[in-house]
View 1 (cartoon, rainbow, N blue to C red):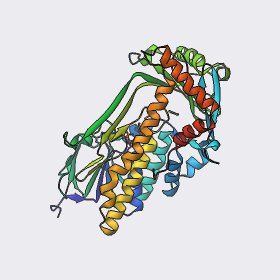
View 2: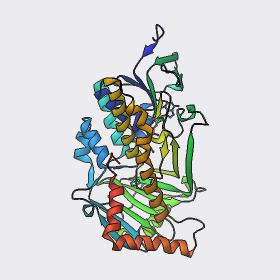
View 3: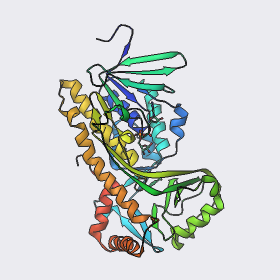
View 4: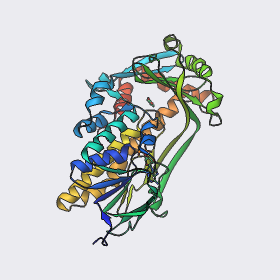
Length: 398
Ligand code: APR
Ligand code: PHB
């Protein structure tokens, strides 16, 4: 029994990023009541610039939750992508894997806007600017979460706490150190990203392996380009004027696409480090972790948001079954089930990063291995099909 005066929900969710908000909608659909506690402001969460590639599973989730009106209208459906090495691009057609296989280009900020707008309409409660969020009693059947706001200290009692609070959140640290295994790889470079209101240099994405480092041509719409350059971790954004960026990008992306670059002023430029990270298990007592709280992928392949969505599909189904009939099998199996898929996406993101980036200590042999693997992809339908299978997203059952 909750002490008199305390608020109670079935599930308390920490973090209102994609993982937390997709989960809140899934629980709402399953008639499981929840509250979302978010450290930052709503504007801050929406305006963070992140990747913009949705797998079929993620678009299907948006459809299922009645959130797909805009993504269906405005999302750019791509049936392939281009890889380039030695200034010589080749195309990977996702149809080689399965007819109709595709990804949808739609920015994470747009996904967040759709999630938040529908949350307002559905009465899903999100408490923004919740400071010092603390999950407690996680090894009991009656956990609770406290947080602070300008009006004081607050508490909500619950059956389960879900940590959707990203890599730097508070939840993962609640799992005892002797229980939690960490697997990690950092990379000796970063990505410098630029957003500009200019038409993209290609109708699909281009991943370029260049002697001077990796480059990626992506987009947000037919009039907005999102371009990236591999850069040194010592670089600062101020070191990269727009002119320097455009010169270097034209060089690395290769002659064929360089001719079609429209240069223009950037309105966002930032540097992000790259990391592969997995913690296991993704649960402890009455705490579950989902999304970046449990795993990070390097951005190559844009799997982060999609993995977060896949985690919460599995978790919401487990919680729905628990509340429908008291079965614990779903919640007990959540970590193993989610991790099985997470590791496959970790492998693909790590592989694609290794294949396309210049590492500081690479020798001639390492470089030839990259070239040979890319040439193998160019010449082998089987290799391209395996690439496409991972790139468009593995089925949820795997
Ligand atoms: N208390 C409450 N909220 C917190 C706390 C905390 N102590 N710490 C972090 N948060 C919030 C962050 O402000 C953020 O809004 O948790 C949210 C986590 O969101 P993301 O970092 O976006 O992580 P996730 O929802 O798992 O999404 C995974 O989306 O943002 C991308 O790079 C990310 O692609 C990845 C995917
Ligand atoms: C992006 O558009 O931001 C993006 C696209 C593909 C990636 C990474 C990032 O692999």
